[in-house]
Length: 221
Ligand code: C5P
View (cartoon, rainbow, N blue to C red):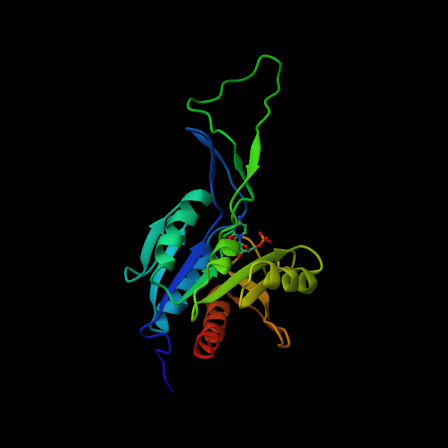
């Protein structure tokens, strides 16, 4: 068997919860740890791929992974678009903040006299959707869908809305799945294919299965 099925391929993977600056010392973020994205990067590397991991925060990983730290959604989009110029596939495993401050404060915000502070938020770019729209022939685009209800229906909608080849749907309320856990349970959704549920098992094992599907998708492009 071919143990390096991604040899000669370049994958771009995102990881972690983005950090949207409020002021020089504060940011908005979410519960994502980045563990799933880092596990995917290791699995892709083990399968022989060249890997660019665009992560919101640094974690330990193989030195062979090209790690790019991009804390905010805008920084992440910029790094991803740059890397996608020479890539065969994208896996968006990051939990990208849907909102950022319209104008982050230049100085640390002080306590307010009247006890109220209002932050003006604007919608962030959708990285996965942008990559899906700009997909070149031969490129594979894979997204995640963290859901707390109607997992399959919502994931199916995302497959179309983001022009993705596969959605890894993740019920983040399942006991052995979701944010900051070492295990996960996911359902792989592709067009005209029966959903495949994998886990609960270690994120590293889930990552291996996801990468195996990515190999199949790339081989059929
Ligand atoms: O639309 P929703 O956020 O549920 O979709 C999740 C998928 O979209 C994930 O793959 C996530 O990385 C990606 N996403 C993104 N940019 C955003 C929001 C989500 O790339 N601003």
